[in-house]
Length: 213
Image (cartoon, rainbow, N blue to C red; front, side, top):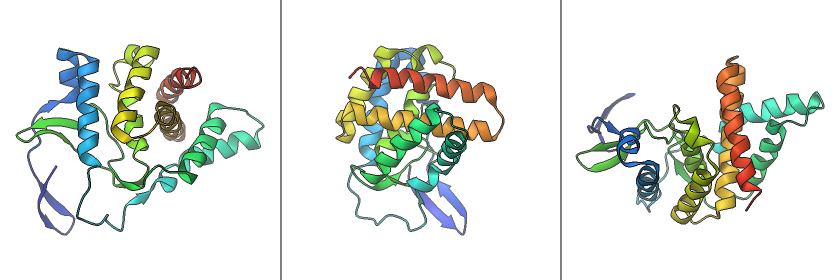
């Protein structure tokens, strides 16, 4: 999405349209929507002549809630998925495939079809491995848990995003597990047990596919 003008913290952005990727999924199916998402990612991570902004949030900082929850579980001698996911996140942070500006919250309602085609809106401004931006797609749309927990969909999505980002399907799934537990840790902090449980259940489904590869 193009920035047309700026005055301090006020920004004028181009019109992104009113059709979300979730609408396309409902009409044309999940495979078509995933392909569009992959194309948007490819555009987001294409080479740029502009340097990265200096105030982007490092991915390690983004994961702070997961690391906090994992530490609490370790201190309580709980071998939770949070503990496992935190270790996975530490490994991904230590060995990034690449480090680029990230959207930070890419999902079916943040990809819009406008006059210039499909665009990503509402970026969070994160810096890190592009695999992180593929992760949230596994947990969306929010009203389609049948899709989000489907092993075939998980595997197919990992395969497509791996080709787009130049990473292995296993690495993409590792990012997805780490992200899901990060999201669950945010819900834990908000005392939202229902959404925390949802994120963890999908992360477990992704974990099962990850260890079948």
